[in-house]
Image (cartoon, rainbow, N blue to C red; front, side, top):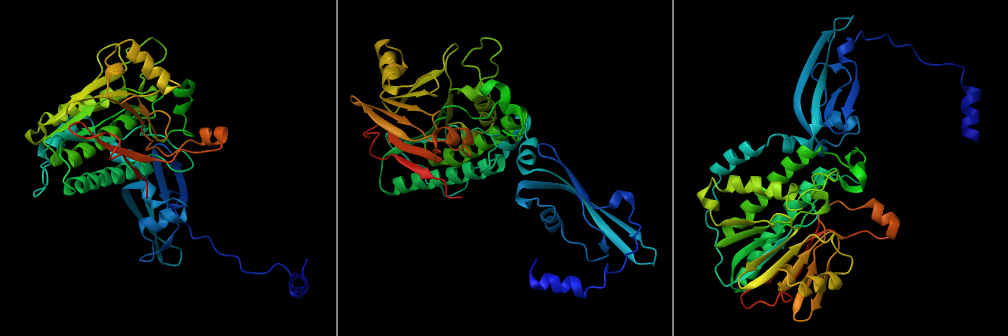
Length: 398
């Protein structure tokens, strides 16, 4: 005990301070918080004299809730008279996680209604030419939650990267590159899902959105990406394959061509079909029984596969080539799954592994001592382009 503490103890007469009379706050308006991380809930602010109540965001912060992570759905105000005649008031603030509020407004029919009304901004210069600009938002895993953030951070990250991809395209266009086609390639793991790691990802520790919420949010984000890219070129192609997180079930043998990534894209395709301004948007899917896809992009064959099928890309692709599959005959291969950027010449052909756009993996970091660096892969191909000459990974800067 220090000298100042001894002096305080010696000089104090004993138990000090006045008792405060209770304010007779009604039970319903006593300060408290009742929040479910997934569904939301409410907070009730401390009682204060009328006119001196904090605003809703300040009240959330007083309960250690970040206003950016929560959507206020309603505010209810209570007012009562104290024993001495003074009036007090309190606020009950009902909230839901911001990402859920974002997704709950959407289902397939609402998406169609919204797209019908959409028109591209005026003054956008549409690219023409013989080559293609490829954008690869891989392993988005909507609904995934880590110590680095959750769905709200993923939404912000994906929208920011989409805007940067548009800026990158405009830079290439100004440089005089011959680009008339844009490819929005979806190599899988669009949502976090509920089957990976034996179903353990359904818990709140790993996911902050339920499966149907993940799908709704993913639809909205894909529609935002299409709206951003479609006005820029004569043709927008959206090739789609499923990843391991996109699997619907592992309890029975299921068609690998039928998964959440395909479901998300097909719902957006239905919406795009309702708007003439999006008639140049084409969707491509694997045929039944297949989990890979090969598409002719401006005279060059693009092979798309998630990557969970392989350990060694050279061995996997060589096997496909030996079997003379459509994937084995591609000129450029794009995969994801491993969450980090790699590329490699395979003879005169080329393989690219896309980085992730998700919030990271604590499990991998603890296991390997490293973490993946998120980003968005873009490159050019087809026409006169060598796919190596304009490769760019857009970093996350949020």
